[in-house]
View 1 (cartoon, rainbow, N blue to C red):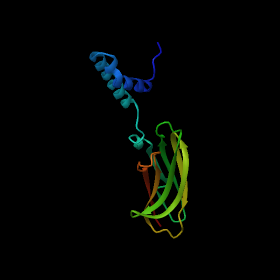
View 2 (cartoon, rainbow, N blue to C red):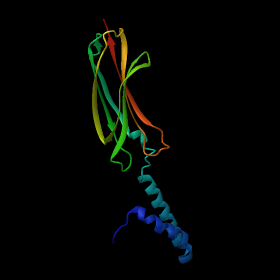
View 3 (cartoon, rainbow, N blue to C red):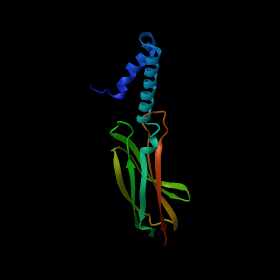
View 4 (tube, helix red, strand yellow):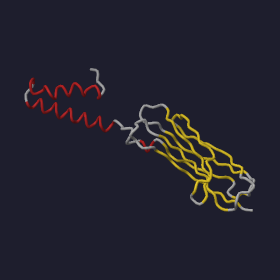
Length: 170
């Protein structure tokens, strides 16, 4: 005997639920209702709502600024890692990456902004920044922000932000 997928049971069981009392005795009808509710609850447990799982779409990994101490005119290398997992049956998801240079909690400059479509996986991205010769001494941060909006327009944007720190000395 062929077993039908649980989703295909729902219309049939729902029809029996409505029509059952007309064709069967009460005991049979009660069993059908009970079976329908059990199958429906199991189906609800096994299906994932993409909106509920939206926090799983992006996962922060690590970020590094190398070297950690530089002088004006020298180069900083940034390396960041993050994971992408599209919701539901989607093969890809669109992300927007932004790199910002910050000091004292303020964004001084947006180094790079890029939108791309990515498949499920872990991504290692890197960039370079040559500091201008007149850069003031102090502590700076490089912020790497990755954001996406799940396919449902009512769902809020999901993002991960990572920062690494470096010092400028003279």
